[in-house]
Amino acid sequence: MCGIVAYSGSGDALPVILDGLKYLEYRGYDSAGVAILNDGRIETVRAVGKISALEQKLKKQTLKGRLGIGHTRWATHGHPSLENSHPHGTADGRIVAVHNGIIENFNVLKNQLLSEGIAFQSETDTEVLVALIGKYYAGDLEQAVRAALNEVTGTYALAVIARDRPDELVVAKKASPLCIGLGRGEVFAASDALAFIKHTNKAVYLKDGEIATLGPQGLVVKNLQGKKVSYKITELSLDPASIEKGEYPHYMLKEIYEQPRAVQDTLDGRISPQNDGALFAELEKHQEYLIGVNKIVIAACGTSWHAGLVAKYLLEKHARIPVEVDYAAEFRYRYPVLDEKTLVMTISQSGETADTIAAIGEAQALGARVLSIVNMPASTIARDSDMVVYTYAGREIGVASTKAFTTQLAVICLLTVYLGRLRSSMSEEYAAGMLQNLKRVPNEIAKIFGEVEHIKKIAGAFARHSNVLYLGRGVGFPIALEGALKLKEISYIHAEGYPAAEMKHGPIALIDENMPTVVLAFKGRRYEKILGNIMEVKARKGRLIAIASESNDDIDRVADEVIRIPDATESISAVLAVIPLQLLAYYIAVEKGCSVDQPRNLAKSVTVE
Ligand code: F6R
Figure 1 (cartoon, rainbow, N blue to C red):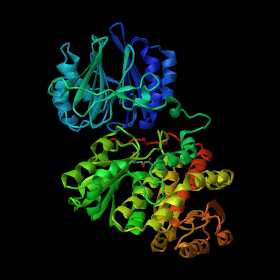
Figure 2: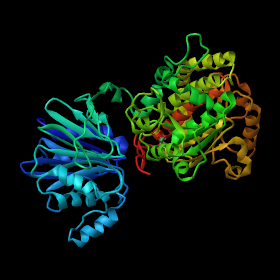
Figure 3: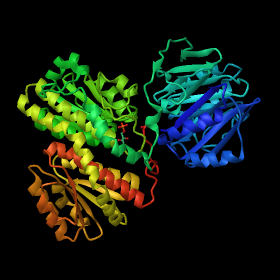
Figure 4: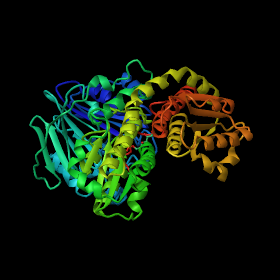
């Protein structure tokens, strides 16, 4: 959360930093700011709100210079105000910095600095860190940053400039992402390489506890003890065109439409030519361990946690392995019972979610091995895990996760077959059937886009409601949860997901003509039961939208609106059913005039606990 960008080179720093910030806006958009060094002065401009507000301010005030830093904020310490916006500087304006992370001992440090006569303008932990750097600064910026960081506990991605060091940029990282870009005659640093990929694809990922000085002498990386350390230059394959919205009004819609491609890319090369097995070359050397595993514990957050719930249904039913699913933040503090025969599975789009990273550490400390399903290569989760299986969704920029989820489901289906076959709990024929069905998913998703005009109409009629209930049974239950999450995060309509049978134990009290219900009523062994639940809703005058399989004709008689998905097995129907739920949430949010790609209070990558 929070995005930082820094530039030093022969070009004009401001346009590069502003452009970079726009690509990082997914990380937070409570306020934004830039600081540029010119002629021995550091000028800072900040604005509350999105980067467009900062741009407006910058129309009246031109900042020229070749060295600068920028920030887009997701508020942690202090509300979103001008004073709390980054960059923050020392009182004398000599040092200015941007920061992503949390300085946990900031209160102790602040009290100490206050007692030494240092005053503060903001409520932020970052200003305390900057003051500490200022205290130690005597002409060597890197040394001052290092001295300050040695007193700090917490997390940081930090970029610092000093008024009297016109060519020098010092950056540091601990548990918050930071990537350096090496261009021709220019260097960049950012929370995400997206911010500079237009300029260079040569990147250096700092490790935790490393400080880098970027300037005319090139790049020097040291550890917190001041010892030089080596670094690796990675050539990124990120296509700058893939991070544009193209013809779509929002990234979310673009990403919904990318799902047939994303799922196909995730399946490619992972189904055996005879169609009877799933292939994971990356797991080959762990096969013996995987055969001996007696329990899987899944830890994840948000949408990825919903994917984990789907995994529980599929792995238990088809691969016959006991599975527990935990919120990552709960898992890490819950004293889970694990041993070397427990496989801990984490699921993450970003690979940078703080709670999931901590869950991996906890699992490994307790002797379990960790297999992670991750979308972002070179992410912390990918690095920390014992086994990694990638999804190939490509960059997901819309804050509400869509294509990451369906690709996670595709990997989970494949892993179900892989583990089922490996552990001899699934027959060759059964595996072949599942894989055959899975191969159809990209095409079937594309067919669902034919429902879009119908979904838009339903969205128009339902946007006025303040509460919506989502019901599903079996593997439809986590999909109901995901549908409810999509709606609440982008349209601010309160939505709850429930197992349909649980409705009678409480939520049914809420149902009346003002509380619509979305029901997942696709083919499967629970279909008749779901019809029963639908009747219960109708008996209480509830309005009903059903997501139903094509051949479920009887649903038309009971539901007010029906959105069709192609006929498929229960597991595959669950994957397909999320598409109309994403579209429904999207068009309701558009109807309400909400900021779809940047919903209030949210950030794409949750890098704080
Ligand atoms: C919801 C959403 C979040 C994320 C959650 C985990 O649309 O995007 O709930 O799923 O923050 O993020 P990752 O998957 O990056 O660990």
